[in-house]
Amino acid sequence: MATQEQVKGFFNKLAPIAVNQARKHGYKIFPSVCLAQAACESAYGTSPKMTRANAVFGIKVGSSKAHFGTAWKDKAYSTKTKECYDGKTYTAITDLFRAYDSLDEAVEDYYDLLCASSRYKSALNQPTPLACIQGIQKAPYATSPTYVSTIMNIINKYGLTKYDNKEISLNPYKLTATVIRFGSRGESVKWVQYQLNKAGYSLAIDGILGQKTKEAVMDFQLKRGLLVDGIVGKNTLVELSAV
Image (cartoon, rainbow, N blue to C red; front, side, top):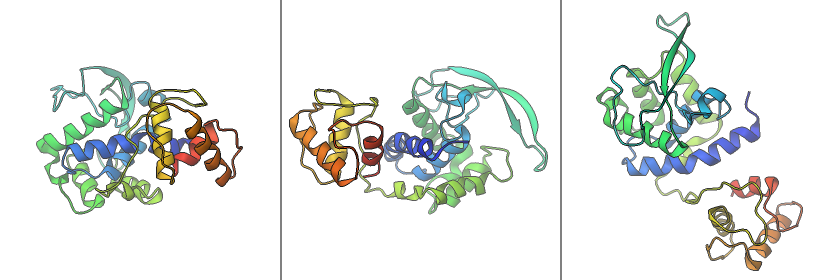
């Protein structure tokens, strides 16, 4: 069972990737549906079998090993799963699933598959996430008789439709460091600077945590009731992610 912190971290990590791929694919599939399916198939990123291979969507290799883009590079892993073929009982099987080098590749392949395969044409350009996931299930994507309701429950519970706004501004930088302090450099610092600017600060996004950025961090910590030390650690990252 994923904790609230794990769920929040999962969506914070995956949302920018999903929104970016939705944009690249002409918004044919809702980001909210993408995120909810990933959450369902990977237990919010906590399933060892899925996450070791970045296989957060549980996409099978299939007998044809078809490619709909360049994100999947023929990597695969074998694992047990359960399928419901009669709408009532579940059968344990072992099958091959697509594996990826990164979450970016997994999300890109998800969009490539759904947008290019004729099986999923009824899911494309739908007016609502419900109609979209109904079209995906129709392909079928999963055999569970409750799959559509499961996905919609996740969307509604976590307010994922906010990511369907085409005007949404998501952080384009990747957060990889868990502790960022004075003198730190790199893309994680750019992520911090971007989030601070969303919170009302005016920082140059240069990837260097210098004096101005440290002062902004301390002011942010003060306003959020955090330990004011200028170090971007676990609690400060959580608050910054919520901006």
